[in-house]
Structure formats: structure tokens, C-alpha cells
Length: 105
Image (cartoon, rainbow, N blue to C red; front, side, top):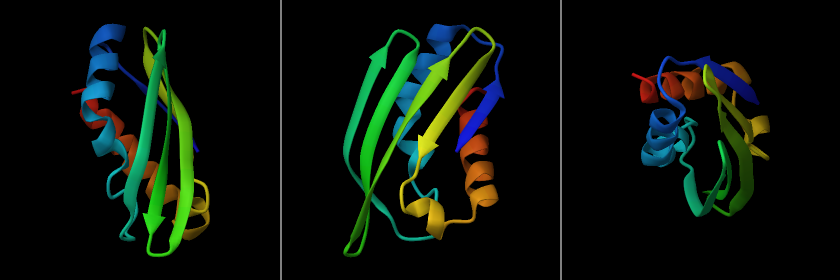
């Protein structure tokens, strides 16, 4: 799933906002009770590579992706693993988009 949101801030401001609020982007993305574990984040220039494990009962699935910050927008490209089959795609996209927009205010 990929979303792109425009911004009017400096790249550094956006990167700091993403870093500060990263956990909030993915918490409760689902209506399902999902716990996130084994989070890893690495900034390489203006790209943040991330991965984590989403656990729901005995089920666990990796989540991985990239967040790229440019002068004009921020793009989130995330693979939700098995969760993509369990969650309504448009609702998940809407929730994630709203959270990214919230970071940029």
C-alpha cells in the first residue's frame, strides 16, 4: 500500500515529525487487537526503512516498508503482510493517510 501526502515544511521538520510519531502511525491501524514488536528503523538520507512484527494471538506477520521525504511530499510504502488480507484496504489507507496528515500539521 502506498500513500503520498503533500507538505509545506522543510524536509528536516518532516523527518523529525515522522521519527517522533512513528509508533503512532501504525498503532491501532486495524480494528483488530494487534500488538507491534521487534521494531527496526534506519534512516538513509531522506528514506526511512522500517520493519516490525504484528502479533494477533498466535498469528504473527511482518510489516515492512519505506517512508521517503522530499521537498514537497512524504510517501509511505508499506507491506502489511497477512494483515492486508484481514483489513479493509480503503479504510486502512484512509487511517494511515489521516495519521500522516496529522504529523504535518
